[in-house]
Structure formats: C-alpha cells, structure tokens
Image (cartoon, rainbow, N blue to C red; front, side):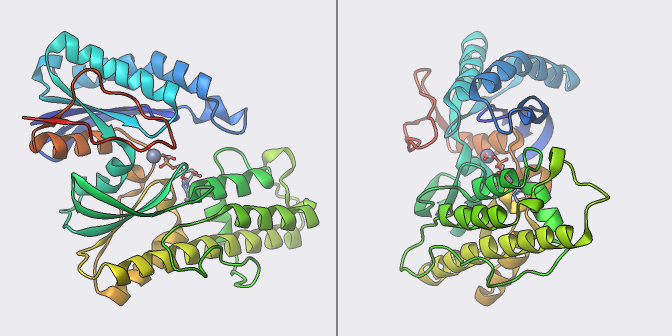
Length: 353
Ligand code: KG4
Ligand code: ZN
C-alpha cells in the first residue's frame, strides 16, 4: 500500500509518501517568514502560499521517486480542523488528483494524525492515552485503535501552543515564539509561585490557559523592560533583565507542564489499562513538557511515546501515515467530503471497502 499524504491545514505545506507504514519520502515548505512580519498567521496569505507551493512540491516528490499518480494506492489529505481556506487548497488538490488518476481519496483528521505520527518510528500499542498539544488544540484522547479516538478532555479557551505564542508576543519575540520561550526558560530555575497552575482544582480533564496568559501580561506590564527591543535579544542588555525574563519563562514553562501533568495523570488514573502515553503536536517539542511527561508515566509503569522533533510540528508524513492506517482497514471518502474548520468536530463519514 503506497499512500500519498497532503498537509495544508495552517502555515506548512507538505507532501509525503508512506509505504506500508514506513516513510518513503517527504517535502515540506514552511511559510514562517511570510507570516513573521505580521506577528502571526494571516489566513488569506496562507491559502495563497499553499496554492503556489503544493503542486510544485508534489511534482518534485514524485519525480524524485520515479513515481506517477497511478502508482499511488490512496491519497490522504488533512481535511481539518484548521484554517478553512488553507484546507480547501489541499482538499481540492487531493480531489483533483483522485479524479485525474482514479485513485481513492481519504480525508484525515489532522489531530489524529499528530497522535499517530510516532507510529512511523515505533510500534504503537492500543489502547493508549493521547495528549495533543499544538498551536490550535489541547486535547486528551483515549485511543483504542488508529481508527477509534474518544475525546476525554479539551481546552475551554486557548490552546497550550497559543499560550506559548501569546507569551512570546507579549515579550516582543519574533514569531513563532514558542521555541524561544522554551530555550530561554532553560537558562534559569523556575519559581513555583510566580504563576498559579490554572484550572486544576476541579474534577474534569479539560484545560484553560487564558488566565495564565493574563498573569503573564500583568507581569510584563509591571516589568516592561522584559520586552525585546526590535524583536531581538541584545548582547548589551543588563544581566538582571535577562535573568528576570528567563526566570519568568522558566516559571511559565513549569506552570504549563504542571497543568498538563495533573490532567494527564488524572486521565491515567481513570483509564487503568493504557498501554502507553502518546504526546504529540508542536508543544510536544517543549523540553519541560517532555521531561514532566516522562516522570508521569513512571508512576503508571507505561512507556512514553514521543514523536521526534520533526514529526512534532505540522508535516505531511503524519497525514500519509494516518491515511495508510485507515486505508489498510479499507476506509476512503466519496468525492463530496468537506473540509472542517477549527472548532467543528471532524465527522466519521468514511465509506469502507
Ligand atoms: O502542531 P503545530 O506545528 O501546529 C498546529 O497544528 O497548531 O504546533 C505549533 C505550536 C506553536 O504554538 C508553537 O509555538 C509551538 O507549537 N511550539 C512550541 C515549541 N515548539 C513549537 N511550544 C513550546 N515549546 C517548544 N519547543
Ligand atoms: Zn498541527
């Protein structure tokens, strides 16, 4: 089974080929530079960039591997959740390719694909608990198989990645700032008391990060010298300012890690027979999140499954892999399937052989 994956749900354009669960090749083009001048993703520009880049990436991937469209067994495309205009570019491309080649197409849930992505590197075991922490989502799932996900908890407001990006923006960091928040935080010890661990004194598995963002905003308002002048770290700034900023970021990383820990451990207590904990999405690249989760699984004597760094952020390899898992079970879509914007549940409207 050779599966083509197409990813255009936000600001990365990707195509990849997976054969029987193993990555054959991929192409990825990021739009970070295009959006950085605006301090965040501009949806209209993102769609136009996908339109320009996607066919070029596809042709180059296929030529590199000496393949034609007819050699593909399944075309998998991220159908949502994501930016609607961006998704429409990928979904339309996939449908056109399906029409022209006669190959069956399959719309893939981008969030499931994130959580299944480590399957490209290790054998996944089920049932497992899945924590998805990305720029747009913070979800806890019980995953019974690659085609069976039960949502146990989700953020009520901002996603974990959004909390990182907003913190970065408050400090005038260049976009996207999550990685720099992580790196600078590693330079100082955290202060457990600087920020309250949000939304844990309850009985549920949901998250809320908007209060934490307000706490950071208040702190930065009190210490405006922490904002980077000209969006750059300067060699000549006072060591005290750098140290205070790094300490604040270390405390921020700690606070996010603690929130995730409380809810993940609660979910593991309630779901006794989990074979592993899978943590995926852009924020799974965060050093504190990786460390905290590694400690949590020890308590439950289960392995922690983390995708490698390149699989954490958006990519088409994970779409091709998820598509391959679904296609192996006979799933495909009729050509009328929809793209699903952020905030709407991705329907299970497949057909099956
Ligand atoms: O999964 P992803 O690439 O895109 C979405 O589907 O949203 O996640 C992007 C998010 C951004 O919010 C980015 O700031 C965050 O992941 N991120 C990080 C790190 N690397 C990326 N957040 C914290 N620490 C990191 N090292
Ligand atoms: Zn994503």
